[in-house]
Length: 192
Image (cartoon, rainbow, N blue to C red):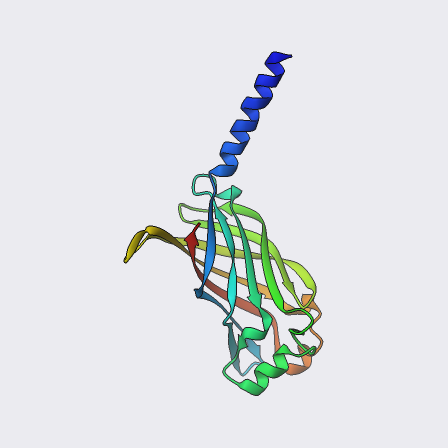
C-alpha cells in the first residue's frame, strides 16, 4: 500500500512538473495586430484590421505541443479605413458586435513543424459560430525589455485562411466579399 502511495505521489509530481514547464504570458494589447484581406468582387483585395486584441499564451519551449493560446478580439474594433463601412460591418448583417462583442480563437492542437514553427489548430468564433481554423505560426524571439531586462517579452507571427461562409454571416455574399479571408497576426506577449 505504501508503494502505491509513493508511486502516486511521484507520478503526481512528474505531471505537475510537466504542467509547470509551460511559461504563462499576457498578450500586450499595444503590440498585437490582427489583419485580414479578402477578395472584393474580383476587383482587388479589401483589407482590414482589428485594433483591440488581447489574450493569454501558455508556451512550453521544450514541448511545444503542450502550449496553448487564447486570443480575444473586440469585434467593434474593426477598421477598414472607412467609417460608414465599419459601422455596417459591426451590425447584425456581419459581425453583430453588440450581441457578440468578442471574436475568439482558442487552440485545440499544436504540432511542431520546425525549430521555431508550428501548426496551430483552434476554434475561431465569430458572431456566435465556431469553426476550426489552422494557423502557421512562427516564434520570432524572446528577450528582456531594453529598459528593464527583468521583464521578458516573446513574439509570434501567424498566417491562416478561413471560409467566411461557414460562419453564417448574413450579408457576406451580396457584399461581394470573400468567401476566403486571409489572416495576418503578430503578437508580443509579456511573461507573467
